[in-house]
Length: 151
Image (tube, rainbow, N blue to C red; front, side):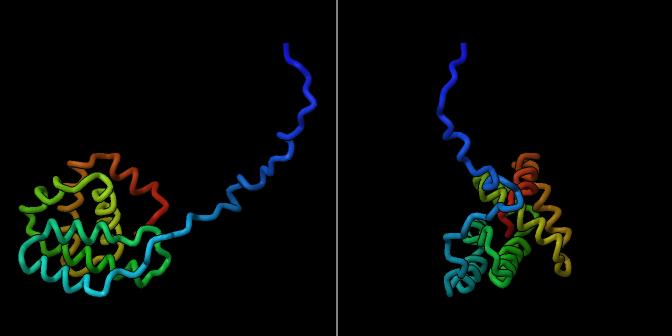
């Protein structure tokens, strides 16, 4: 049998804090600005043909959740520079060495590249999408579409 208790502490919970209208996004504690020499290092890696290393470096430095559009656009330019410099035959080898979190970030940049196409980029982005989907599966796409942190 249930006992009647005189405890009323549960009535002091502020339920308005859980309202969707008062939701606040997490603060971005990471530095939004990339190191100054990243463009030089990226061009050095691409000149040597080390595309996988360049892509990994750029994806790890992605400003996830940054509200500064200049930083996000600069990161998109860097990623597209790497993606468009890779031959189509090398895409699968590069995607296969990425870990799942970097694959999700790559898929975010692929979709962002579709939003703002550059001359001749759509065909290569479709090839990248095909290879990432083949390895990452539908889960990769679902995580990208439902994630609040944009690139």
